[in-house]
Amino acid sequence: MSAIYDETAIKKATNVTINSDLLQKAKSYKINISKNFEAYLAEVVRKREEQQWLEENKSAIDAVNKRIEKEGLFSDEHRRF
Image (tube, rainbow, N blue to C red; front, side, top):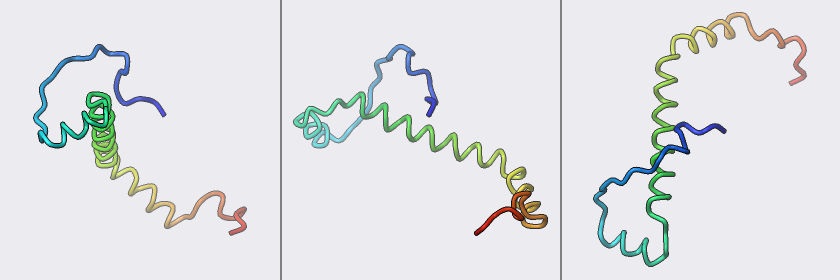
């Protein structure tokens, strides 16, 4: 699966606010906060982009589904299920 962003781009420092107890526990388990946050953020962005794509293509998807419902699939006569 291809990345949704340039994984070779330089890292940029930023500030985030996080629950202090959660931060302490994550550090006690030696969890790489930056790496895990980046992975989580990438997943959130992927889901948003997927949602946006579905919204942008809704009319085309609906049209294809309507045509299939009306005419069936070209392979219907060859299916065995």
